[in-house]
Length: 337
Ligand SMILES: NC(=O)c1ccc[n+]([C@@H]2O[C@H](COP(=O)([O-])OP(=O)(O)OC[C@H]3O[C@@H](n4cnc5c(N)ncnc54)[C@H](OP(=O)(O)O)[C@@H]3O)[C@@H](O)[C@H]2O)c1
Image (cartoon, helix red, strand yellow):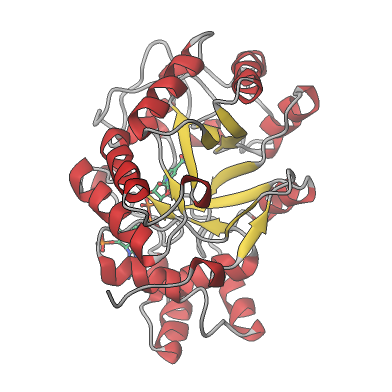
């Protein structure tokens, strides 16, 4: 087999627990475009190419098939369990007491593993929407962020570490006001926080805030999720891979602009988790964070591409009478209780 990279050559990040994890992983959200069979086949191929970090989630609906892929890879001696870093996430409808534990036990059974390496609270609130529902739909049970509810769920997350179901716990799609409300009150700090990060959405202030607390950052939608469903697009959205600066640097390096987004991410310090089911793409994504780095000047040019362009706005999680998706992100500087 030709396309193989030695995992030892992939840069690493160190968690506050001392554990090292790859500086790039693979996403597993097939969205409307790819079913569980295609995504799990890509995971199988990616393990063989040299990926060691996989970003899973219960709500992606494919953990059972990915679990079969992991079991086969362990059984065939392709990789050992301890060489993989496997993430999963607890969905919004599973925050109430008892449910995170049930959700994690189901993930463990689906993924056919004894422990998860890090379990994320997928979103910081309990608001739920039916899969595929209209972007403007409001669930009557939805309500603003509640630190009290979050802390209740987080304390069950901490007990999942105590019981050995997960080795680390993490948060996702947080804001500084939300972190300020919860970090001082928790026993086990998140080892990683997932946040949307791509050249057009760099979230420098939040990124610096998290890194200053010795928490690693996984950047999702690292290529700007160019093929996300139309219902998740707005006319104002930028297309990272079409940005002239990104495209120009790609031309100079003789690579696809997607790869420039990933080089930028790894050289900046976050851990990107690009998604692709195509071997030529996921191989190129891993290879190109090892070879031919961007210059300091190119990194500086890419900094200027930031357009504060959040793609995953989360509008389906809004509550009745909320003004806009901006309310989910505390953009007026106050936190809604
Ligand atoms: N924590 C959260 O709430 C959260 C939210 C969103 C996403 N995530 C995670 O982040 C992962 C990545 O996000 P994403 O899938 O939305 O977006 P993404 O990784 O930014 O973009 C994926 C798309 O980029 C294209 N691509 C990938 N590599 C390429 C290459 N080398 N050349 C050309 N095109 C390339 C592919 O398009 P084609 O398929 O057309 O080739 C692919 O579908 C998800 O899979 C999921 O694991 C987490």
